[in-house]
Length: 342
Image (cartoon, rainbow, N blue to C red; front, side):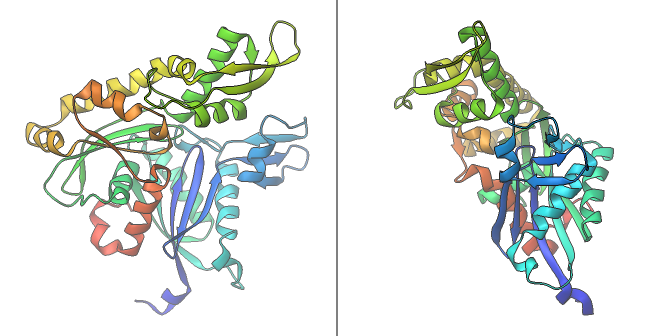
């Protein structure tokens, strides 16, 4: 313990393509969309998070909404740094301090990330006063957040479907034995819905509306026991140019998402085929764990279960599994030091 430790604050961050979550003192203090609105004339950031997401698709020429992260990695360095900085400043406990404290941070990264992309995440955090920045792979954090003891000599399979990437990993002894990272996740599902509406109904809908459809009636299979009610969707008619409204059922969305989900299934099968036999035996007994927002698609667990013939469990509160795990790591950094990337 150094003299300056009382001035150091510990922060756990899940820097996601769709949402950024921050844990401070064991509580989730920031849960916001990863979006920034910038004034094109002055170059200033006008809004960030929820405010900026309300502007998405509704801006004029002088305002641009940016998503600084793409496929789980930083695409716009400047915007991401400002976004991280504003999120950290909005933490209630840090607002009261006279000066910005030094930060000890643990940040999640996708498992298929390159060295350069890793450095970008690290530098972004160091510039917002991160004195010690540790990185952790998302499947690891998700496993810890679900409550799996990852240090055991026992195989566990995690499928984390986020906004930009789906991470599939087999973990044992505090390490990733085999993993696959595919760039098919929430964003691709949203684009699938936009494309389906366009081609099947001649209706042009924006990203926000497609996102709403995905959350309200998104499904992975066409025959659910208790399907959600049909949904009314408004958009622009591509033939007449007039605004119009149509009725959509969850079966149509299941059709729209079918190909993308198939690719996630293929990635799961591929990872299983690379798993060493002893760990495969463990996975047969423990099953597959789903985390991330994508796992909330109705019937997805059933579909993966049918494909793999294994039991599939969805984490409780899957949206926060990763950040919860990261929060547990920062509380006990010495225990988890071996799995962190310094």
